[in-house]
Structure formats: structure tokens, C-alpha cells
Image (cartoon, rainbow, N blue to C red):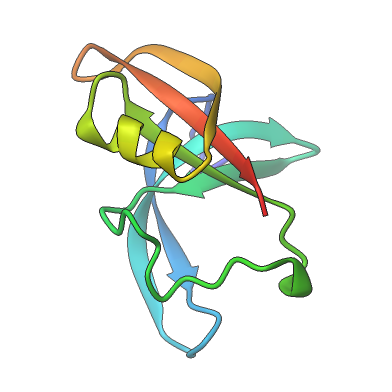
Length: 106
């Protein structure tokens, strides 16, 4: 729950993110994936297509990478070329367009 609002899968929110390599905290957009046991699970929204400067490794405990992109957007083919597989669809999510959820094991 955020400021007394009930969140649902697909909602886009602004959230404070603390970066792992600094003490810096910034407000960033994220999409709500699901809520479980009063914890809201979100995925960050970024234009950083190659994830430069974002460390996602097994050594740090990561097992999968997830991302969301619009169906038919150029990023879709780019992510598929990097080995991401489509696992879900948010129908008519942003701009009336289907959004696709991709996943890739690390």
C-alpha cells in the first residue's frame, strides 16, 4: 500500500530508490508486479536499455532479470537478442498498448 492507496498489478508509481554503490536516494518510476504478504513487488522503469552501471550478478544473489516493454517497440527485439523470453502480457497497459514482461536467467 502506498499513501493509503491500494496498488494493483500494472500500476505505475514513483518510488524512492537507494543505489547499492552509493548512499544516494532518487525518485524513480516503477511498475507494480504483485503484492504478497503486505510487500509490494515492483520493477524499475528505465531508458537504460543495456543496464549500464547496474550490477546484476549471481554472486550478489540475483537469479533472474525481468523487464517490461511495449509490444511492437524497438526494445522488444533488442531484449530478445539478449536472450530475454516473454513471460507475461499487461493488455492495453500504457497508451492503450499491450506491455510485455520479459525474463532472463543470470
